[in-house]
Image (tube, rainbow, N blue to C red; front, side):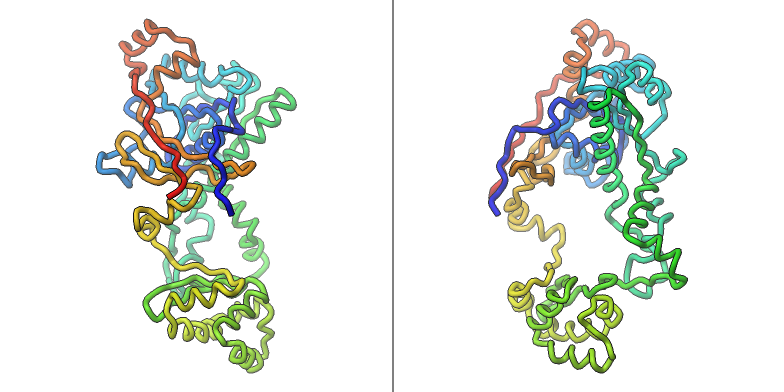
Length: 423
């Protein structure tokens, strides 16, 4: 498949979003929209938000975590503890013409920046709020994991303790729901002229996912709780296999065609037919394969253990079986990041505090156009620019705000970056 073209076309151009957020979900929601062309202005307190120092860090101390979640935004630094600082932010939120009046937030700390206060100034306001729980109380991904059942099913068979997942899935899903909710509300505003508040609770995202995937219905209707199954794929046949030379693959056979291809590639068709007859099982049925997964898994494990990784890859490549070699993050970055360089999602980005590296743009490809990444802003990088252009403040007004400690004006040139997408 040819690489998509890199274009200056941006489908969300004209939308101006003010972001009052931190950590993962709401910054990801803002970045998702920024990568599609929205002008996202990240508002931070003086000296930056607390997540700016979160690990992992570059040698300079710049957060790779923060920079990864805030690519392509503008940064405004303001004293949010002061009434004058919050008034600047309120002016910014409620201005911006037809494409303005949109805010993403993950806190209701300041009453004068609440939906009610801002909507009183601009009735067509779109206010998108992330909460921890539906009642507005606090929660984070890891506590939501604990409360919604998944850690009891994650991890090796026989593990007695809950296992939280490394990847903050609910933060990621919530960030995307925030972006979808914002676009839905903005679409409604275009059609009716009406603004609204959109609320997304992190715990609701996890519960909705558990329900949508059938976990909650199963727990209500089946008295026997589901047990951990390690790397086996529930309800079908899939698991990891080690090869003779220490390689490891994940192999999944979702359909009967996949299953027959796997048996043909490994020469186990007759052996598995005999197993099926002995067990009185129809192994063309995927749940029967799951029921007898350990017997089948051991048969296949013997074949993989007798072949090298290259031999297994060659055999599987001739089938429609779903499979992949396991890779670490170090593997993905090996050989001057060759695997990343070859993916059109990635482009080379450089910015203050972080050496040039390959970073992702938007995974969304529209009209064969790939939207490349841009660098993340330094603290207050665009303070002067935003207040001049968006609020019309002059040099004397900026100087007065600076002298009062409301802002710390910056005159920093944008970070250099490239959008090289090939090796």
